[in-house]
Length: 248
Ligand SMILES: [Zn+2]
Image (tube, rainbow, N blue to C red; front, side, top):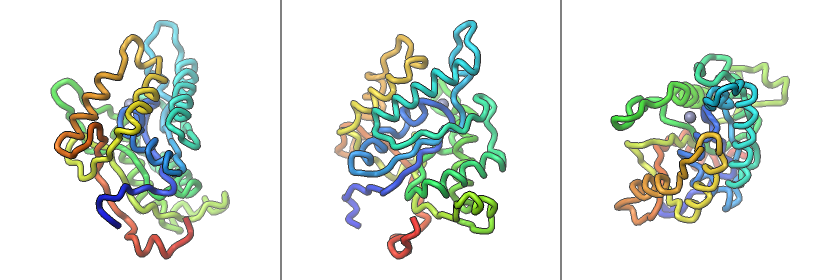
């Protein structure tokens, strides 16, 4: 593959903790893939049910509002489906049960690329600590992707649901530093901003446009990109093996 060519997977699955995580981190890339015909699946571990701190707001009401916002954001980006696992927001843990749920989704959707966070990120600048749910979701996603999803004798009971082992080809971990891939999102920066605006309960009076343009242009600096998203990429199945196997 020409290293300058834009890699487009047939199917990609983004696995995150909360509604709006995809929009902040990687939707510019996912929307660009969708424009090239990729099928995109979103898996939300929680529905962000403690993320609206209005008085009188119950978790059930908040989850409904945030799921609706996420569905709207997914539509704006051209995603094919949104799966809500409905784990408890603010208390997400990388349990074996969560790993199995994610393996089920991976074996069902059979993504070529799994996109998730970088679970090793704790410190972010001097004014933010990476949310524990983000770390838990990212660890669970990585652990489900490799090696679990590809091992026929692990969670073999999923075969009763017609789900057989599947090895994703690549993992894209969204990252602030240590990136080895910058994806040009000039064509989809407006989609990223619009998809973020769909999370009205989170944006409130804040318009994300300026910050999103600043962050994305910072990443694109020195790479001849007006706007970029950044990833650490792991290739789990080499091109030859992938092309030979049509079971995906
Ligand atoms: Zn989040």
